[in-house]
Length: 313
Ligand code: CP
Ligand code: NVA
Image (cartoon, rainbow, N blue to C red; front, side, top):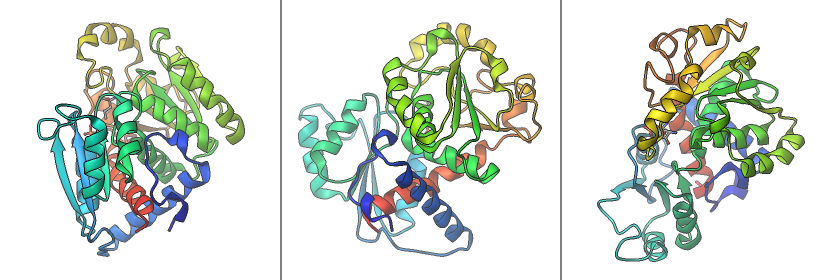
């Protein structure tokens, strides 16, 4: 097991060494293979997981809940309607109490500072299941899927086409910078990833050899191993719909854009949920180049690996 990860929270990949991320990818492959062979393990027996959700979720909730439960653990789903999450009692106090009753905590919600506070005060591993700023468990599944298609991800070209400032693009920027994946963000000037994060990732990419590009030109998909997109309007940003559609319409991933890579084996990735007809056409996401469904399945394997490592199971 990956001893040094025991007890650690996962808030963003910025806090992890590349070698630790690689170990988690290997463990993800192992648990996927175990599942395929029909092996039954009870590695979370006697453990409990609090699953806090301020925002909706299909994949993340189901991945955490099934990965934990099928190994004998007891996951407890708690929506913002159910508990005092910063209401009536302080977030710090909620974190302290949860830490006394649960082995680990998953949080999905708005402010990144909430998941940081939970990690600081609970004393147990806390997993970021998506905040306004980051979606790290998604990024691990994305790299796992890329590697299933093309082998080791270092030196591969991944292009994110769409809202370059969102949580998914930001997490890909971090993990690619760490792992040496050449990452191109293709987005209009108004939606580039924030400068502070790009500057934080610059030395990481120098160390790993990753080439990081931010551009508004869709022609830069040339040679890409994978094209990735996400919704134009993330949860909590519904009031931005009109502006986003206007800015991002030219960045829709359709067959014409896929063909611009000049490669027939380029794959299409999407974290899901997808709004077909906006950021991607049905032809592409339901077509032969799409690996979005493998990617969704890999959420479960990668999340199980993260929990196994951080709980020391
Ligand atoms: N990709 C992802 O996080 O999906 P959900 O919002 O359904 O959890
Ligand atoms: N950027 C999207 C990701 C959903 C998984 C959102 O935050 O809504």
